[in-house]
Length: 386
View: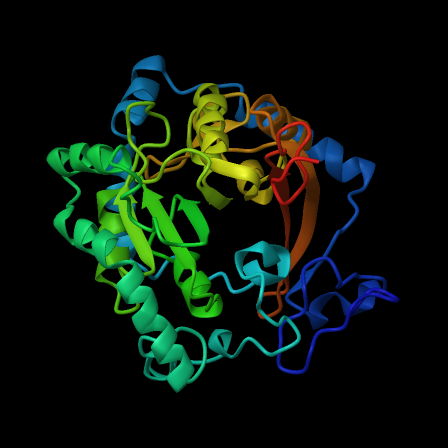
């Protein structure tokens, strides 16, 4: 049910986040989710008490050191087990973050979200979102020519240490880096098996688009590169440790329009978050933005942790060895503003998810942010001096 006066979804298209409100409790199980659900004081107190209880016993320091030292191995194991079947493709991205496809018409049904894989692959071919028109083919061949040099570089690179040194060399070489001819560049950090990057490539048909995507896990990057829709003329997937200053990026500073972090920042130690955001901020062009969606304080996942899984305040380790932090809005605001970025959006999404089959309700808490790199003093949004 849409909020009074709120936008209605087009026929055949999912309801945008933030527009379905539960005003009649008798309708609870009529939808799979309800937006912006207010918590009672009792519910807030119970959540706070639950977190205090599951935080009383911390993981021993030697085990904490092991989780940090072997973090990439735990994520490799995760993707070896689940491959690309754990996360669903995030087609909601373009409702929440239209910056990922500025020319995408949101009034049209997102057909790719409702097709099966075989139908979608047959329809897409190598042409992105929609039938392969002659104009689209010409644009893609032109794009391939523009990216020829960077494509050759990409194919020469592998994910071993020697390759990462070559990646560092490419970054320094006279503007010759993957995507150097692009006019709109997006970096996804923590790409996993590609559940964000492939919807972007399918939906954003801008011939000047180039998407970088990286992950801590070699296995995850291999899954992206082996996907039938991976196109090295439009995308470059690489292994990267967000927490290491010496881990190179393939693009120079002030070259990116968008950096996207979807449930990624929460996976690293809180003490290392600021340095990671500082580096990402430097990669943005003036006017470029970081887009984030991540776990909020008292999310169901936090309340479900048992004693002995807590590493530090609001930071936990799962049974598979991967870790997760639960943020407040103020904490994220401090991280981004300290990195010199300006707030565009910082909101809490308190969502009530419903399992209609089992008649079960689940309270989720997520935070969504957009922070922009300011233009130099005396310069307007087009970058020109006033």
